[in-house]
Amino acid sequence: MTVRQAVYADVDQVLRMAAAFIASSAYADQVVFNEPYLRGLVPWLIDEQLLLVLEHDGQVVGMLAMAVVPQLLSGDLTCSEIAWWVNPQHRGTPGAVRLWIRGEQWALAKGARWVQMIAPPDATDVHEFYRRRGYRPLETVWQAGIPR
Image (tube, rainbow, N blue to C red; front, side):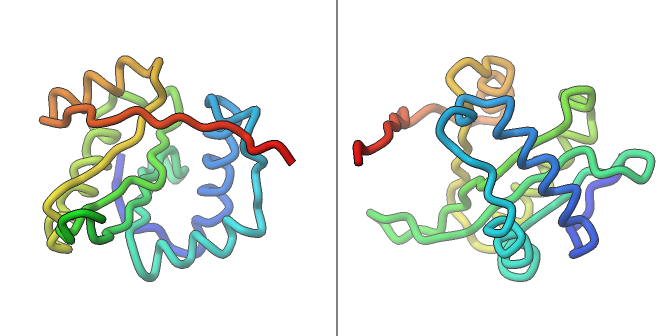
């Protein structure tokens, strides 16, 4: 398995994984897959932030998208996960871990002091992965639709 910077030729495979994430997550009843929007976002990630892909036998089987922004209260640079997806059959593999390590290395090189990750409340395997890497939960996100 190979971790590499995404290129424009990866856009369709990245969009496929984004759709799979939405369909398999708690977002499925709240988020509509917006392909035109994502086709604009992915090049920005490639050019301005970070979009890594995990490749196995010539197929993209995982991705990690991150952005570095100032932390609101302190101004310290913080790296925020935008998306982290690995196809189910490749989760927990050394390649999936290398994908994450490369993201942390990028954040450090960009001067980030912190890395923030998001995980569904029922993803106990992901929570345990974060704990083993020194992360701790800080807050819970709540979301509801606004009545129109």
